[in-house]
Image 1 (cartoon, rainbow, N blue to C red):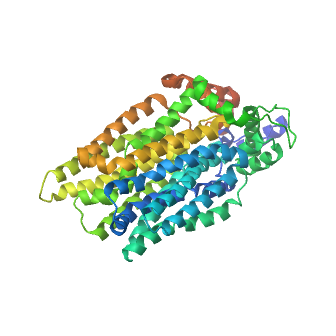
Image 2 (image 1 turned 60 degrees about the horizontal axis):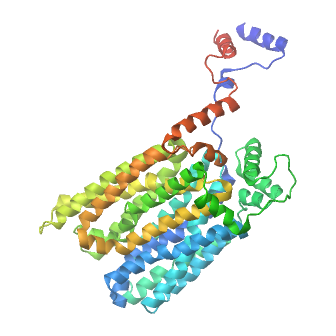
Length: 538
């Protein structure tokens, strides 16, 4: 009878009957498969850098034997690619604004293809360095453009998940490089290292073909005045048509296009040779842009200064210092490092949009401080004892794996996710290129000095130094970095600019969101909800 009366009341009132489900908060939208596919294809460019890092760590063992080069020459060979990549990352901002994000990715693959072949056929050290130069330019292009494209094509609900893909593929490339080391190590010395390096050309072929199936970035299309094309891409990559319209409106506003202008082709004022962009970034930045730049540069600096490339590039030497002398076992240990990095970066991709950037980042860096300190302690004990201390050896190996796990679950992916999503539209390409430049300079300096560093202050002392740098990084992140989870890319200038007082801006944005989108359905004090649920309960 109660059900009958409820139906009669609904008919009389002319209102559709509400159920408890009507008052539930909206569910999380399903992941956009089209945006997912675009992010995968774009991020595959990062596999080029990962493969080079991983394969070079083992290849240098055989290069040194075959070409009879010194430790200093090995340091330069390993680390110089990072400095060469500065040329590519510096040019990538202008290139991507000129020919588009998609064709810049194709260009990155083509350059690296040429570099890998040159390294594979190198008859001597000088020719090998030239191949590193060409490959480094391709790596610089890939590092800058992959996170920019992915951030611009991703809906806000899954931007953290999708923009972490470049780091996933860097780790996958490192693992493939380690496996390549082990697989080709059985060949004659003069042939093995050449195949290790030359095989890196293969992924770039598939990459160049796959990228042609991708759409252009909607933000780049708007900057070119192609609103019709941008609208089509946004309809496909957004979680709903309403979100697509909202994203288009925000991009138009950021690009200086009037809101009422909805033609398929419009005229957009071009910036002269990018000079205004660099002035806004470096010479006359607003407080928000200055804060954004500080955060991006700080993230990239501490990511590399805390020693990740020393562990990845010189892991065979670290394992040898830890007491493992068999070459096959050393290479198998490096494969384990690559496997752990890859597994934990995959875990991180699913946690970024659920837990948020700050909790993951702070947990990751804290874990790095502990594991680096423990690794330094273990290596110091091993170094000061002539007899083999088994527990110290096990501790050193465990801490290497734990360190790369903590790095991969936060510091690794969040550096690229965060720095690619916080810059304003007009400054994004150049801003990200600055971040990449800092990343590669620090990585290059570290890679080219690590052997000399640990010979000067011992291997344990080197890792105590990295632990101290990571501790300073944790303090910087805790103080200066606001949470960006769920924010639109065009929200960032409101969130930044308060520096260490950013929490006030965060509270303001939350309040604004509640006012803009709140309809009272989630308010427990709403009398209509209480009446409706009470009636249903009876």
